[in-house]
Length: 218
Image (cartoon, rainbow, N blue to C red; front, side, top):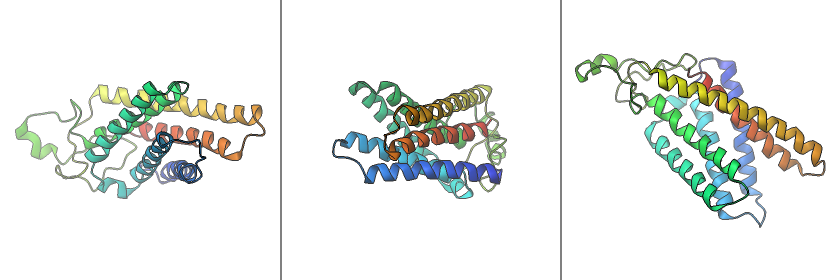
């Protein structure tokens, strides 16, 4: 979870609005929306809820590996959609990267999936099991057992931190791009329905929330 309460509330608000937009889009889908569109929305809804939960203490009791696998499959879904659907490949590619980043986040928090996270020999494992991967902005208290959902050990290697920094920057730029896109839509299409503006705004919120979450991990 995020240690700073105000930052935690900010992230909660960002992903709560993002989840609300997904629910609205699923419920109010027009007739021209296909099951492929609805599946993609459902995956984004799950992602928003997962990030919201991750920011709070309750998120520390959620096992890491099942959602890791889920978001890898979700990334695969968007990769397939990218290949099959023309005209939205940049957006589909971005969504695939977002789902892959979710899987990466769970892998980092697990502490045992990525190479270099668990240093030392097997004989040292019992002593290392009590220490979580060091993530300055994340509060890892209450998850000290090696067999628990967050059972990591040792310190994250430099390459893990490098990927986290890269993802922080990537989603920070994405948040800025979506924010600019939001104002562009409002200016270029003043007659566009409010749901179109809200959808773009929520993309900016989700990207900002992702940037914050990765930022507190480094």
